[in-house]
Image (cartoon, rainbow, N blue to C red; front, side, top):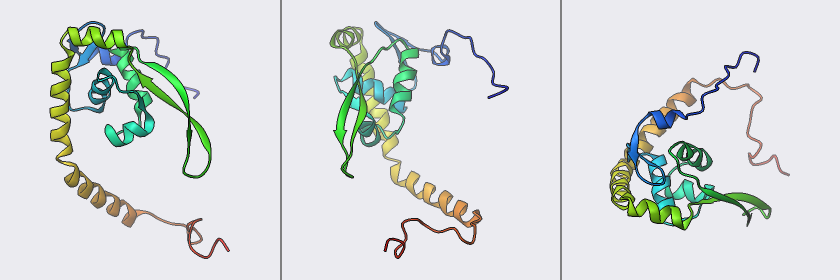
Length: 163
């Protein structure tokens, strides 16, 4: 980009947002967020990949949340892992986890109670899932009604095109 601003700040903005300080990192103040859930799962000795995050933490942005957590002082380990796909390909995914000594230090400093409150907060948020689905359907229907289509535009996957 020609006019992009250069950011020379060393500190991440998430650090400035405030957090509970424990060794080895800080715990996010807000406990009903995907960032908090990802950290909670990592502190629970889980090894997460993008698909796990979609189904377990309701996010498609696991790598971004792992990056955000580095701003809180958490350094997740990462490794590439080969996986088979439903369409017959083999692809490589990233898997993230926290080292056992990091988890032990965090739990000794009180992260277990924080994780319990994150699970409660996320459960309360998930209780609103049906309402959010209905709201998203209304929003998408309104967008479809306003969308202009080219007269020749169709779906590449419509019946009769493969034949």
